[in-house]
Length: 524
Image 1 (cartoon, helix red, strand yellow):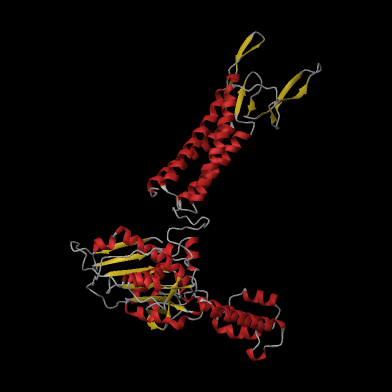
Image 2 (cartoon, one colour):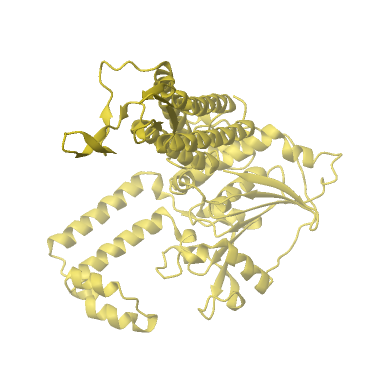
């Protein structure tokens, strides 16, 4: 997870900011909300972790950031005796996934920085167990906007939604297809109760002797027993003090929001509304804070007990699902940024154009006393007689629309043989380079691998350009004797050659982009 450590000299604070969900891999981390024990982490970081649990995916990311801070000694440098920032308070913040990671990281750093503060904006609702959430009220403040879905996401809430969905299915008294078309039409809140009464039975009228109802009850019992037997019996909540930002007028104006302290169990159910997704937008959240002028107590001093960090080695945890340096295969998760995806798309276009340009029979045009004749690397066009005179002599010639392969007895010129070889090499190296580019959209690629990719891309561009030697074919430069007049034949570029030039330029552009990525990549 990307993060940044900055110094805000306007408010005299050192700030650690953690980025929120942005890629498919981040989304997978969000969904790993299985409770994970904090006992080992607590022993290393200096807090009581026995009997406490947290979000497994966020813990993995927090450990990675903790280890990276220790490796780079950033905080140690900022809070050294000679640093001008040694008295600046430490603040952590993040949005969504970043808020969850920042909350756990604040817990891990607090033994070294007792006065630190953490501001978790629209944090997922499954970070710590209830007892630990109460303990973090001293240094974590969480913000929830109106009907935002993310702070209400937890295993317990998912189970509740499923149970209520099954209950609603049992209460439906109209055909499902009619209900489907009815639900497609938006309904105002004032009319919602009336519409529900038309399609749903009262709960007391549900028949409990039906096979469907018995299956639903059996499913509920199985899930309940499974949750009690596993780690899911530990329910996770929103950490720290919770400030709920409520839209009092419902018109989504930043001036109408009112903040109040809420209890974490207020978010134990998912609110289904048309704003449940849009309320998670961080940009509008900034406008809300600006308009309501939400301020709180500020700590002006930082108590630094120790600069000595203990690195957490996740490889010692056999039960950990994902280790810090292990990246699973997530297609197009862009761990190297979006540039490899752009380069891979351009390379796919270049390869397709190169293959198309060399496969037709219109690579070059042969000029002689007869009409211009298209020729390709592997096929050519033929002359067709379209009109005969009285003596069966052809008086009108046109070019055939079909392509014909060169006959087996045709002896290709050295230039044509070289062009065929370069075209084949371009295809092979192009496939290898293209494969590597697509792999880079899913895995972190080190500098050494990028250097190999650069070499393959430059060779592909070179081979693709050398295919054009066919234009200088020796068979093109001949003398033809017609009625005691000599005509010099020649060849010029046709559609296939033009496409090959475009393909060559595209391969070179991709190679330049890969060189830039190689310079940015970590050595290895």
